[in-house]
Amino acid sequence: MTYLQKSPWIVHYNASSCNGCDIEILAALTPLFDVERFGIVNTGNPKHADILLCTGSVNEQNKVPLKNVYDQIPEPKVVVAIGICAATGGIFRECYNVSGGIDKIIPVDVWVPGCAARPESIIDGVVKALGILEQKRIKMLEKSGSENIKEGDAV
Amino acid sequence: MIPEPYVSILYALAYVLVAPVLGGLIAGIDRKVTARMQGRVGPPILQPFYDVGKLFEKENPVVTVTQNFYVLSYLVFMVVAGALFFSGGDMLLVIFAFTLSHIFIVLGAYASYSPYSHVGAERELLQIIAYEPMIILTAVGMYMVTKSFFVSTIVASPVPMILLLPGVFIGYLIVLTIKLRKSPFDLSTSHHAHQEIVKGVTTDFAGPNFAKIEIAHWYECVFLLGVIWLFFAWNPLIAIAAIIIVYFLEILIDNTISRFKWQLMLRSAWIVAGTLGLVNLGVLYYLKMVVMP
Image (cartoon, rainbow over all chains, first blue to last red; front, side, top):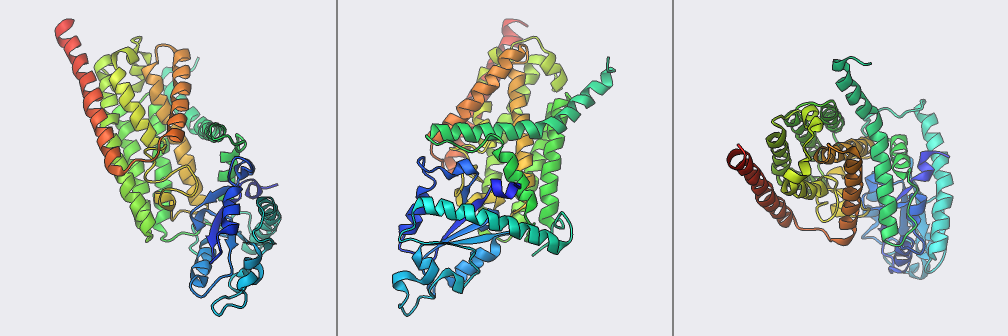
């Protein structure tokens, strides 16, 4: 197990969700679930994050900000789409302005179903994402050809 | 027996090697105690080390290449300030190096283009303005008691410094809350997630650069707690007890008081430095000059 799996920091983006899934994400931080015991911290800054938790069906207004947040997370990173809207667009699927799922805009690694997704399944999804995060780290090391990424490379 | 001149170098070396371990452990205990105060289980004690290890595994995206230089300078001058202090050097030089290191982090934050980063840099400057007078008064108070700015002389003094400098000590504690980035004074960046204008000065630092800021903060923490030792230097046991009590109080204040605006921070820090600090020094001067010359 590497340090990456012991300290996954998340950033949460609401792409036109109804707030149901978002409340459940924040519920995971409460004393009852306390995700900080796994080292999970909910950061407000994508540059400090490893995992992007994304909710909502993505409309025309927020697909650019979503792409922006994704691009600012340093590699290795994973995306967890939370709730049925994030997976397929849910009940908003037929709307004229809805893209219909996070994966139409950015690559998604884990889908957490539910309307709203339960805190237990969100935590389960993040734990699943940790395995993918580790695979991506190894892939990134192979790509850079050395154990350490070159210091201070602008990306 | 080690020859006299080498002892101070040994102390400085010990600080450079031990301080990050100690600082990380203190940060881990801090997070655990904070979690318990909020009724949570909390992360493992070693969590800060996992975090920093993780940050070194990430890529290092920088906005401008000069950021690398500023962050490294921040870390290096923080280590220099602490090493000077623990080798028994001049307090004034220590304060100079300490302030310089913070100027570098402010410059680093100004080097990027993010408005969050700029707000954080401005607030960090305000914090420096707020705490600097009190830190200088602390050094002056210790000089008035021991007639020396050298830490080696201050620490060897048999006088119970806390009894002569209670006002200065309380003023130093207020400043310590600013320096340890504890609420109500965690304006420029915060330890708590998802807060203070999305992390203020650290906004545009990611991966290894952010890890260096964390390590510098561990060095800083050990140095600041070392200053508390000086107040109780005549009895090491009381000194250790005082450091533990002070740190616990800082965590308690962090969890019970909400954040101030910068105006109130500046005012309270200066009023405390102006009243408790200066009055304390005035009384001390009166006692030395008039009562028992």
